[in-house]
Image 1: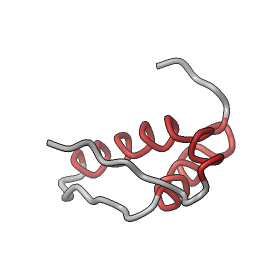
Image 2 (image 1 turned 135 degrees about the vertical axis):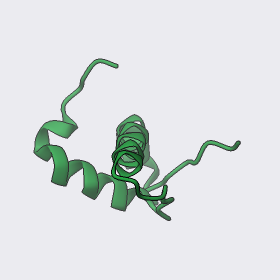
Image 3 (image 1 turned 90 degrees about the horizontal axis):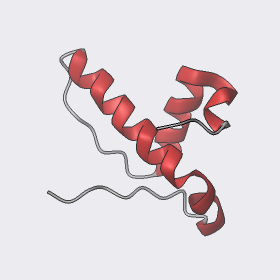
Length: 66
């Protein structure tokens, strides 16, 4: 299985938020699975960032431990 890579289209921004996007994507998919919904694969990182900001607010931009 190939792990998806999502991009904002801006290399500098991708370098700064790449791990955030990956984590938010997996959180989003686990939430969908728990609700009985199918897994989705957004075309860009912008949809994933929007989800993260909507769910967690600006604190999503703060570093956190894994």
